[in-house]
Image 1 (cartoon, helix red, strand yellow):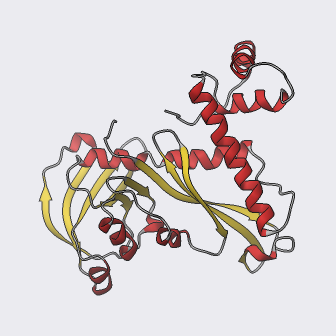
Image 2 (cartoon, one colour):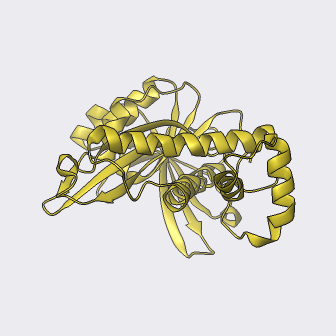
Length: 270
């Protein structure tokens, strides 16, 4: 699926901490945690923006700090369904795709023809009817119901884009899974589970170092057109930090000799 628009996935992941060691990151009465709020460019699974907060701060608040790119798509889960904040995104000339929640009151204005073979069950133009939502979002919305046959699940999406086919909107939301893969990758392969310092600054510094490592490895993979996965490149670099060999030669030769020994999930890059 090729679009002229930039597509971002927006989500947050929680890193659990010990409350007695990290009291500044109180999450629950007996638990501490931090949230890594991330804006991921889905063209290359590269983080564009990251914001680290204590675990008790809801991720939807990050929308107040983002500067939205006109014409771009922002794919987010229903945890970000806040009509006042979404309308600010609309005013910026950007588009969103999210899921609706139970209890959201929407009135159908128009129904559009759909192709049931694509999984789309309905494609409607709607508007909010609740007093608060109508005030916060004084514009029309598009509601799409989609049936995921392989998993036997039904999804209801909301978007402010009215031109793309309904099946394409559903496919865009499916791309949000890449940010889950990103969170899983950095947690499994980079050191953000055990921290060397206990202060707010120490924890954030270690996370930023981990993210910088991820981005640098991704840049190396792209610039050198390597077939190795990010995991494989990271493993090679971790055991050869003092080798006086040009990087292209080091990575190419080492990967060719060990390419059958790795088996790891790979994020789609470019």
